[in-house]
Image (cartoon, rainbow, N blue to C red):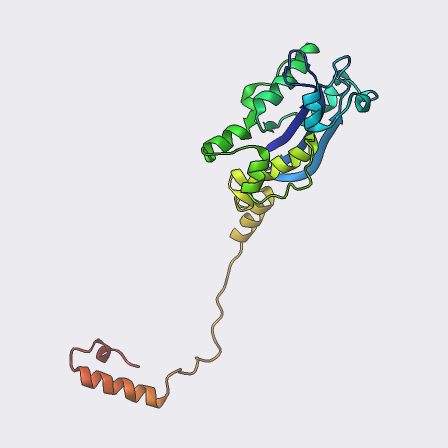
Length: 232
């Protein structure tokens, strides 16, 4: 099963007016990172980065001037996500912006059936919270000390680790059946194991004193001793 753990950064909070300015994604296959990533900064056109958003991610209007607009990256973006589930923390926010950008290009929205929200997962698993990405990193012992600002690719990498832990950790992923493990299992089913006979019996482990002590114990117990029915 392919999943893309992704995150977006935006000019603000209102997807009707604000725009996506960064998208980062990490590909998982059967809950293992494949090494494939997607990362793109995007020029928001005439929409300026709100000061509150700038304080969160640090992406300036000047930095975005020479970046491609969304229409120029949409094909590559959708090809990367093709056939995969979209996994995000507070996915309602991210998908609201992605679908708003797609709508501006008269492209169909991503179906909610293809989306997994890790924030909803975390709230069910840890109802007492807190369930921010930073809080979940602390809960699961994931090092996020290098995260001084929000960044789409960095946050995706951290979320991928959190997500794997929330669904059962590395051991759960290791237990998944892959084509390779199935092939190994099928191959082992064809093996015929022939037991070898010992060339000579093993030497007895009891010495004469042990045998004598055992006989004395049986005599002391009397006729009811169960060991009297067995040879030593």
